[in-house]
Length: 340
Image (cartoon, rainbow, N blue to C red; front, side):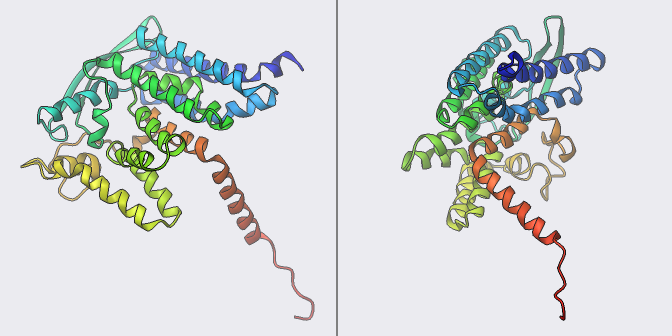
C-alpha cells in the first residue's frame, strides 16, 4: 500500500483543519471579524462525516485511530483554551453561566440585556476585542449546565468533557465515533458552545442509559436548547407516536412557565426563546434574536446535522435510497401496450 493511501485519514484531516484555519486567519487579516470567516469552519464540520470513509479506504483499524483522534482533539482543545488561539468564536461560554446566575438572583435574563467583553485571538499575532450585548435566547435549564465559579475556562472544559463523553458513548459505532471525534468538533467544544453539553445528554439518553433514567435525561433536554425540542418532536412525529410528541410540547411549556408568568416581564421569554422575536406583540420588545438570513454564520448549528447523521446514518441512508427509488419510478416512461 502506498504511503499516501495509508495516511489518507491524517492527510484529509490535516487538509480540512489546516485549510479552515488558514482561510479564517486570511479573512481576519484583510477584513477583520467577518461572518464570512466562519464559512470555512462550517464546511470543515460537515466534512467530519468523511473521517470514517478515509479510515476504511486506508484499511486502518478504526479503534486505535479513534484513540489517536481523541488525543489530537484534546491537545488542540487545551491549546485553544489556555492560549486563546482559535478560541472566542462565541460568547456562549461567558453568557450561558451568567444567565443562570441572573435567574438564581431573581433577575429575568429574557428581559435584562447582558453585556460581556472578551478577546478573540486569530493566531499568535492577531487579536480583536469584542463586546457582546445579548438577551437569553435559550430555554432556562441550559444555563444551569455549568461548573459554578469556574468562569469561562471551566465552561470550555465542560464543553470538552461533554465531547469526550459523547464519543465514549458511541465508541462501539465506528461511523458515529470517528465522525464525532473529529478535531474540528473538539475545537468547537473548546470554544464554549453550549450545544455540546446538550448533545452529550441527548446521546446519553439515546445510546447510554435506558429505561426511566434515559427518559428523565430526555425530559431535561426539553428545557435546554430549542434544537433539542425540535429533534425529539420530529422523531416522535415521524414514528407516529402522538402522545410522546404532545409530551415534548407539554414539558417544554412547563420549563418556561415560570418565566411566562413573571410579573410584568412574561413577554421576555415568549419573544426571545419561544417565537424568536417574530411573535405577535414582540414589536415593542427589544430582542437578542437574529434574523433567518444570517443563521448560516453560526458554526455550532452545523454540528447538529452531523450529530444526527452520525447516530442515525443507517436509517437516513435507507430513507434516502427509498426516496431515490420512488423518484426514479416516477420518471420512468410509460411503455404503450400494443392494441390498447
